[in-house]
Image (cartoon, rainbow, N blue to C red; front, side, top):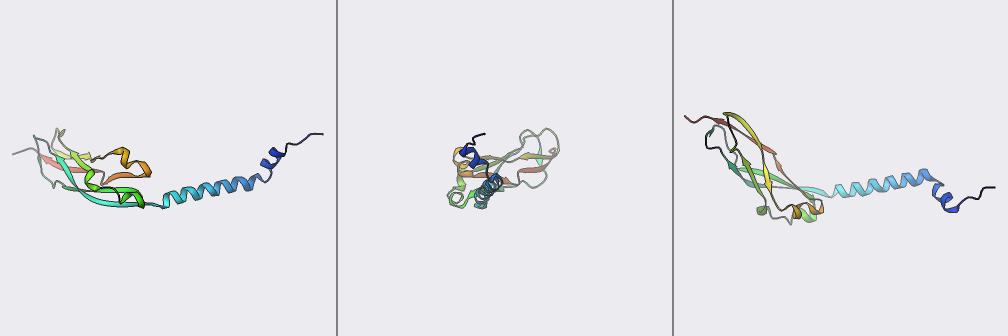
Length: 133
């Protein structure tokens, strides 16, 4: 006669309900974690570096929207003046439309904890350049 282990028997008994309960618990934890994520949008000045050899023929943006995402308790504590946005067109070598990404400078160790993210909207800028007359 085979002697059954009571611990293993208890673990494998009703295993479908146990697996279902664990999956529901994980779903609730993930849902609650991401339901508390909100966005704060601030408008900041955009520092644009233009090339010396070409002239901008289209409008040069002077502001950009920065989106700070995270829990409500944290995103409103962020000081927007500590975030800098810039677009560098100094490497332009030919006339035409040039698109560059917007670079955001901020203290990553402060803004990446507690699930916060910082991004720009739009993520890139484009300008039409012409040869000077």
